[in-house]
Image (cartoon, rainbow, N blue to C red; front, side, top):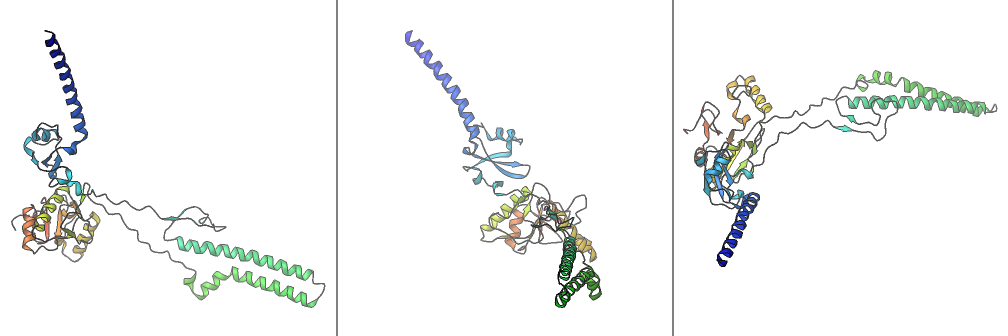
Length: 349
């Protein structure tokens, strides 16, 4: 009986220990999710790889926890996110560029008499140079006027102190006359310059074309860092939708096995770039050659769903793009979309 009591006491203590240890372990595993196996799930953006927490009883339950169907996740052999196939961790999110703030500068020495160049920050605009020259002209004319008056006063003082000496009187008269001539030239300099050449006094504002900020779709990612993919695009960005990123990743991986690269000539365009392209074709009378971004469906290049392939004539490239799920525009052999948006984009190619 005595030993039975000890047995019950030891059993009770062991039960308490393991019950608490289980709770502590679950909490620790919550903080170390990357230590669990991987789970490949079909999410709203296509195939995505998630690290399966080790304390989750099954992958079906984990799929339910993250809002997917029970059969959407299955096990893959990997140690962390970086080893998961189709993982978007290598894709950097793209941020729309913001408009640059106006450029300002501050004069180290303010121009006396000017209401603009007072030493406060000044925004650079098309009228800045003309205002600056006008402020300097006003300052120097005033300064020359003051100097001329001072020189005339000196000439008058020399005359008063000449003591009747003819040489000193002549020097005083010459000083006063030169000061008067200088004052007249300073005051009439505008008329003199205008007589010589009117363009010397008519400053035209500089034409400064501001760079307009470009507008891109939200939620795009950068695909330029996909292995075995080369971006040679102009007037476009190496960005796309997450599901398009995964499809490009798949196509590039297939080409890598054949020692070939996926070369992209055009990626996602801003609304402004697509609009300019459309208007350019319309001026040539061929509006149908470009997509109008103002339509209700929008344009695949603007939405980040399309890429133009430079080596599109390569049969291996065509096969890789088709296997990855891309459709091909019937009117443009280099244009591929995933998922399809254009009505004339077909997967039968």
